Image 1 (cartoon, rainbow, N blue to C red):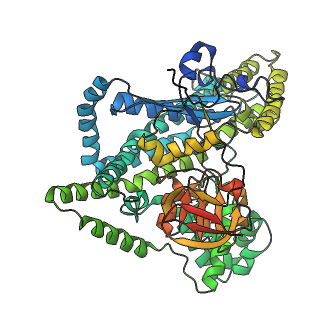
Image 2 (cartoon, rainbow, N blue to C red; image 1 turned 30 degrees about the horizontal axis):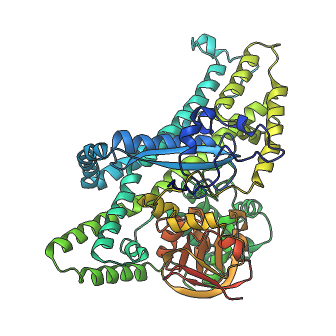
Image 3 (tube, helix red, strand yellow; image 1 turned 45 degrees about the vertical axis):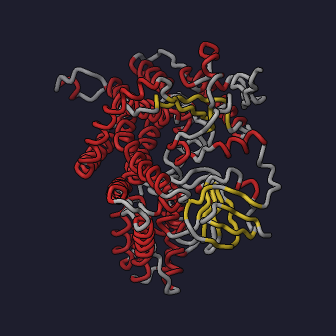
Length: 608
C-alpha cells in the first residue's frame, strides 16, 4: 500500500506575484531554486527563516546571509566535524529566504566524526576563557580594518605626487580594491561569527539533554534559568542610556532634553550651553562603540544604528528620566535573577542520587554559564558594531556612483547584488579612465527603478511558512531551541492555523511569570517609541537593540523563536514573563486588547 507523503507546496509550484516578474535577476543564481537541482530541492523540507530574515531580501543585503551560510556550514562539516549535520542550504523564493538543514545520512560517517568532534570541541571548552579573549582581539582587529578602508573620490587629474613619488597605480584601482577589501572583510567576520557560536549552543544543548534525561518532564525554561544572570555585553548600550538620563537630571537639563525637537538640534544647542558641556562630553564618549547598535537585527542596510538615528535611545532616555524622577529603579533585577538561578539549580541538584550524576550536572551547569556571555555578545561585535560600519561604507560607494551619475542616490546601490556592485564600480572607473567612453548609466538606473517596484510587490506576498515534504520527525535540537520549529508548529502550518479567530495562543515558555495587561502590537523598531509603560509587547521578533523597551513593559509575546531566541534570553535577564514562538500572536492580538501572558506554561489568552 502506497504511503501518502504530506507536503507543503513545491517551490516550483509557487507563482510569481503579478508585477514582480523577473525578480530572480536580483539575486545570484546559486541561491535560487533551479531546474538543474529540481529533484533534490523538491525532496527537501524548507522553512521560512523569518527569525533572521523577516523581510524581503534587498539584492545587496544577501551578502550577509551568503557569508553566514558558507561560514556556518564550513565550520560544522570541515572544521569541527559535528557528527549529525552536514550544514545548511538557503534558497530565495519571491524575495524570501528559505532554509533547509542537512542531516548526516550515513551512520558510519557519524561514528567517524564523533572522536574528531570530541577532541576539537574539547580543546575549545578547556581553553574557553583564553580563546574568547583572543576572539575579542580578532573582532577588534577586523572592525578596525574595516573602518580604515578609504573610499576614494576619482579626481579630475591625479595628484602630482602619483608621478613624483612613483606610486605606479591609479585612484581607480584603489576604488576597486577598496570594494573587494570590504567584501572580504564581511566574509572574514562571519568566519569569526561561528568560530565559538556552535560550541556555545552545544554547551546549552548538553545541559538541556542531561536535565531532560535525569529530570523527566523538566520545563525547557527551567533549564535555561539555570544559566541565566550572565554579564551580557548586549545590555551595555541600554545601561549607557540610563547613565545619560541620570546625568541630565543631575545637571538640570531635563526640560531641554524633553523639548519636542529633533535630538540633533537639542545636542547642538547643548554644545553652546555652558550647562550642557559636561552632558555632551558624556554623550560623545559613548557613541563608539555603544551607539554602534542597530535599531533592528543589523542584517539589513535600512536598519540604521543609534549613532545614525537617535530616535530609539532618545525616547528611552526620556522615559528613564521620568521613572527616575518618580523615584523608581531603572536597573535590571540582577540580584533576583541570580537568586532564582541558584535556588532552582540547588533544588534540582538535590534530587540527584549519585555522585556521578551530581558531577555531570555540575560540569554541564558550569560550562553553560561559562559560554553564556558569548552566545549574546557576538551579536554586539558583529551584527551591530561591525555592520554599522559596513553599511555606512557601502553608502560611501553609493555616494561615488551617484556623483558620477550611474545611480540617482546612495541607497540605490542596495538594489544591486554584490557582484553587480563590482560591475557598476568597474563601469564607473573605466569611464573615468577613458573620458568620452559612455558608461551604462541608463542600464543601471533603469535596473534599480524596476527592482524598487519588484521589492514593493514582493513585500505584499504572503510567503508560505514552509515548502516540500513534511519530515517524519523534527528533533534537530538547534532548530527547536533557536527557531522554535517543532512538529506541532508544522502541523499548525499544514492545518492553515492563523485565521485570527482563536483567543488562546500556545508557544514556548520563554521566561517565567504570569501577568495581565494591555497589548501593544509593533512590527518594526520605528514603533518602539509608541510602547507605553506597563504594556505587554507583542511583535514578530525582537532585536537586541530593543533593550530599552524591556525596562518599561510587563511581558513579551513573539510570533517567532524558541527557548534560546533573543526575546526569551532578554526577558529572563529582565525578570519579565515571555511566551515566544506563538506563530500568530500579531495576527490574533490587537493593540489595546487585554491579554494574559503565562510565561510558566507558554500560553497567551486574549481576555477582552
